[in-house]
Image: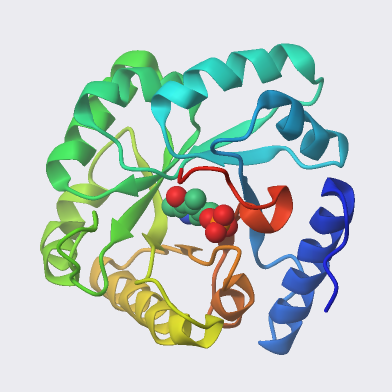
Length: 237
Ligand SMILES: *Cc1c(COP(=O)(O)O)cnc(C)c1O
């Protein structure tokens, strides 16, 4: 399959592949949202994506977002939405909340409580995905499933966080299909938590450039796609 040149062509290609993956799994074409991951890319490149009609972006570092978000706000006319996809350090929470309306990486009750308190102070209520470490990888951030089950009621009670679902970054894989069991596992955990908490918890933030179609087939509601739109990053984000 040939990859189209230029950001508008690649964006369209991703959207079409997303719609086909949703259709294959019997979901509506708009069942899954696209988050364009703009980490490491300059504002001029991001503005090209905005010009092609896309307004929701993911960054993994608060510091990087701090410089890009205000510049882009003055460069483009549509309002942009920013999601934090990288690990959130406690000492960055106060800076992060005015920049990001959605956090994909809350992974402890302590961090959640602190973030909710600061959000209250700032008059914010971010959407939150709880990051899950499905494989129990030492090096990865994220809740292990047992701890999440234990903390769920306390998390749901936090007044200034709107908990919308779960997020995962599966272990590195050689093929997209290798991601499938992890995506299915995150969906099953979500279903289990919904039964436990008696609430609707619809969001599944899963799937990246290499495996977003498989993630959508397994129920993803938001895919985080960077290099398939911008090209390869020069340095790791
Ligand atoms: C960088 C990053 C992505 C996007 O990765 P690509 O392979 O470039 O699509 C998605 N999620 C997280 C958490 C990331 O850090």
